[in-house]
Image 1 (cartoon, rainbow, N blue to C red):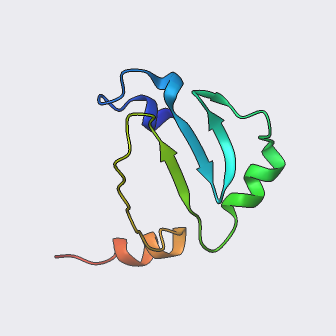
Image 2: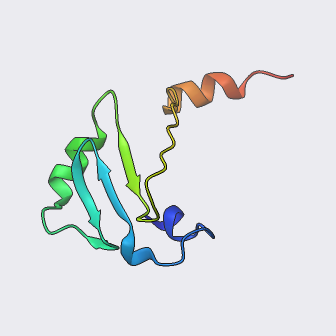
Length: 82
């Protein structure tokens, strides 16, 4: 939410909603009523994580796919020189 809030394209954070693996985290700029630390912790420990961010600005969509950014992955790749 902090990174989304710093986005210069967002005029009104109160329109923003965030879901992680379909679990509501933020609804219209505030913590979702159904959000709990236990359920959030469980959601982010899954192998695949889907984060949906609705900025409330219209109907356009954008998808970003990323890969493993675990500590082991970063450590292994930090040893390469180009």
